[in-house]
Image 1: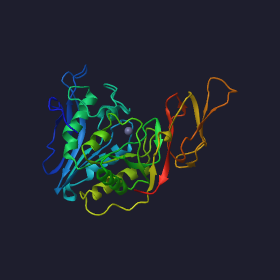
Image 2: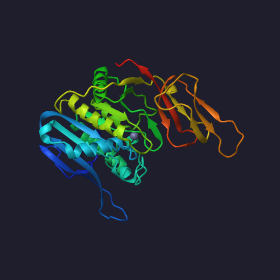
Image 3: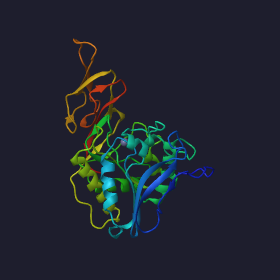
Image 4: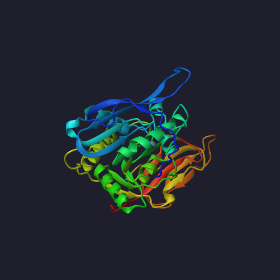
Length: 338
Ligand SMILES: [Zn+2]
């Protein structure tokens, strides 16, 4: 990606040296003047662990503030990892959009910014755009491999998967899928996006990096099972990159594909959603996956929502009530690994 040379410097200042060997815990400090703190700052926690020669991994969570497997695995990693274990460098940011994470919301309470729709960002933009710009111009260029944790947040739930995208550079795509396989989630996904504009994923991929993302659960919480998947996955990716010693722990993973936009089904009525299939179950094309009951009166038939594309139920709306336009469910097909 070509950087605009006319862009002003980022206002973000790291409180630690990102290059020196050893382990350092600090912050990315972003000035944010406001009523309760005239010369205040947003303080985004960051840890850098650097050992001997080797590549750099950038591992992140909290890109969306209501997704918890990544932050749980990365706050844990940041307080455990030692320079003696590391060949190269690990940059850990457990909560990229820290204001959103601290509020427990997908978007920032400061500016309603959705960080994963704000890339590549702006140094003179909103707080969320300034965070995006700092990653684009300062952190991602340091990295050889980038792992960004997501889950479904408050409104979606997923079967646990690590994922990469189809890319124009097939050699880069193969490196990304090799890292997805190393992660070792129960499912590995060739992921299709509803709208890839403004995503961190797209920015990192366009910079030629090896990029792995995840969807590990959801519902605005994390389970012991999905946190264990996240912890094992980040260690496996660091082993795969040669930053930690040893081989990734072998794990059985089913490969999934989303070959068509028909994999996404959106609600067309408001109401109470009654799923008749659960996550991970197989559904065939045309099969009823959920019923939407009108709630204002009794005696009305529910709207049957059918799979437009057969496969397994890979994601579903989490809360019990839906609105028109909500993503109701996602199907994905089981494939041979690439
Ligand atoms: Zn997310």
